[in-house]
Length: 543
Ligand code: G1P
Ligand code: ZN
Image 1 (cartoon, rainbow, N blue to C red):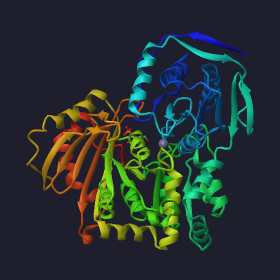
Image 2: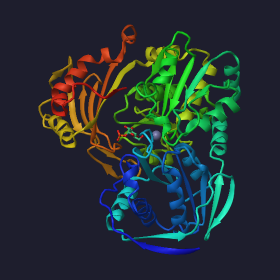
Image 3: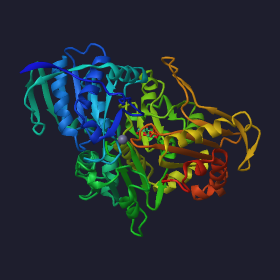
Image 4: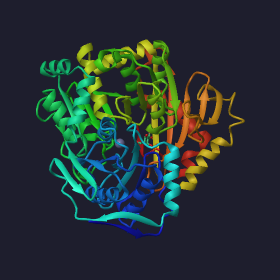
């Protein structure tokens, strides 16, 4: 086996977004496209000679090919060991755990999360650092800078290795270990949650469904829920990962997880339903005929953390992304905890967790997690809910209603306008910016505007500043209207409109969120000219 240096021309479009580099498979299939990006990562992350790299992905189309390419490059670049999930599979949270557990230098995770998969769909790659979390902006910026000047990559002339059997093989100077993708993760979950209590709940007539959406959590959920916890066979639906995710869009929300939603709103609905996304970091939680918003879910997990053994010592603090509702802030205040507001994207939570400032984190985009790893974690959230249900012996709806009664309800909704012309999308945000001086003091939707700004975040640990993280219109009563452009899309622009209003009167806490927010929705369109500028008369997805 000999190492070669291959001369290449650089690409100018390899800028990592909210969560790594995501492009159409066809883009990745261009000669050297993947290789250039991987070499740029290796050139930007410091000295890893003699160290371990973790490698795995969500099993989508191109996953296996990319793993073979990366292994040969990792060997030629000086890693001494690679840990690879069997079949090339590692959910994003499991990869984060494996990096931490085996003290790897870092990991490459192959995923485009919930984006559809297949030869004409999306692929993605992101680098996670030694703490198990996504590379911080300084690192992704260095990688991007390197992609623009790269002119060669290193690889090993070698045969592909088998990814299907557990065990070790040698690739040049590097040892490749194919590991069970589920085992370490399952042990971690067992250390955090009261499996005996959950087992008793499931044995006592409590019924549930978990929709793996033909994506990576299938094997994790089947082993943990049906295996370790004794849920009945068939509890996990769509549990075999497919390269095209069964042609679906594995985003666990009310629109895309419709199979599960139908089951949970039927007359004979189970007590509990949950789904996760393509790479296993997102979750959706439902009760019988009842949807829990991700923002509420974070607040409820925090308020009930004592139910789970892994959190019984108390939690250090809570962090949420800026567009996530302030429901968690109210819990933090009541518990005397710090609550941090960060820009969108899990990478901003890493420093806070490493510094011991927060235990629980969440995003409105169906992401919840804790310091057990440095990614959000879908199945973790599901197990946390099961643990709470097992201890509290109440329905999902009862737990949520009681929570609202105690803390107030933050009515919340996100409206996405997908595939909008990029210039028009920019103009929507600019239209609001142009009114920053005149809006404060005005009455919109019956509420007084208190301030407007472009959200900017100064990381309290490393002092780095991230600006222009969303346009905010804030109201005196705590209500908010926020506009942001997605950083994960692969075609056109997606405008995200986030709406929130607070209700502390328990008699008015049981409305449909769209009805409760109706006047805010009208006001948001008025001030931004969203519909006129985007040429759309309604959102593509409402969550
Ligand atoms: C979206 C979500 C964000 C999440 C990210 C990765 O990013 O909004 O909360 O962290 O996916 O899962 P966006 O497309 O909004 O940039
Ligand atoms: Zn994901």
